[in-house]
Length: 464
Image (cartoon, rainbow, N blue to C red):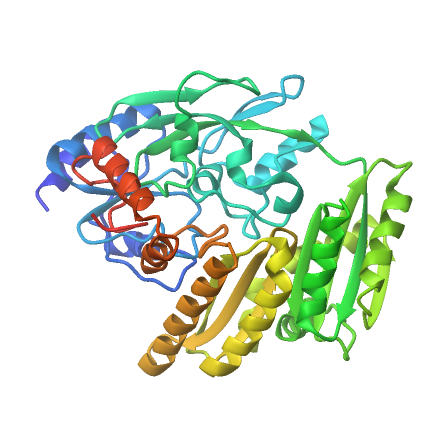
């Protein structure tokens, strides 16, 4: 297109136009493949981002911000006539102030790298998506990522104190600040958390950090029915025990981890429940005993307890790698694993999990279930051949049905993966079911106000 030459003049050496170098940017970790971008721009300063946005705004060019490309709903997939804005050069941790409990990071910093740097201060940044080895600060903010530790620490929105954002017209705003509390008008920081790059480009983030827990213990409980898993978690939370991590795995997931990670699970177990609790060194043993008693109330097949850091790390890494491990359970190389992502209140887990099992059978699908069960988050990992229309229709029907079930039980169609391309219809459905269509209309009006030319990651979350 004509504007590419001008773009190269504005940002010399930062614009990629070769087809083979652009192709990796057509997809992300989801099953969607987008259009070839007109260009990929890799700036390394806020000034360059401003120049790009001013140029694209003036010319009505669609911009797709991109972090680590780990979206599971197509959030970073380019639509037609788009420029991909890669933030990979924004990869520095600028400041760490443990006495003030914050760190300042650029959006391209990988979450694992951030936490590796914070260890020397005995602090960490709690949001912990399974893709943390590749997921970036900016991408996780843009999707309000959760992860394994969300049960105790909440999702990303609870840990962002302030942002520097380049708006669609190239202007820059700074929201929030370096302080743990502020009450000064509208919370504009929260507006950009979960916006999936549809409102602006995050160029800096002030993040709240937290002391690393003093002591951690783990229990692995195995059950023969899915409702027992849900009941155990609901009872635990009812009695005031909030696990640091609580993850469940079904038999398909356990089999995949045995094959790829060489971790053995009891053959008679249909479901595994991984529970971590954290406390002081003096009180961790007592807390573990209380937690174990609750797990034993629901007749586990077996249960093991450990405080061995190496053993805990082995299982932790296995759970974070569950998605890739599930690929080993495909019937053929054409199958993909499509991840559903619903959430319900903890009290509704037992009935929701049973309904999920029934719907898997009703739709004739192979589905592996796992998730961050302590915060009611269930991942349905659906095996499907994308070229098989009948099968994909069944997948869409299953996803819609599970979304309706989640809403019926007071939950949501998306827990932590965002909306992207995949869940636009589900978001509309949830708005109708909750008789809350005015909320979605307000979102659209905010988008129109901040991005009047609709150039920021168009086609994501909703259509205008």
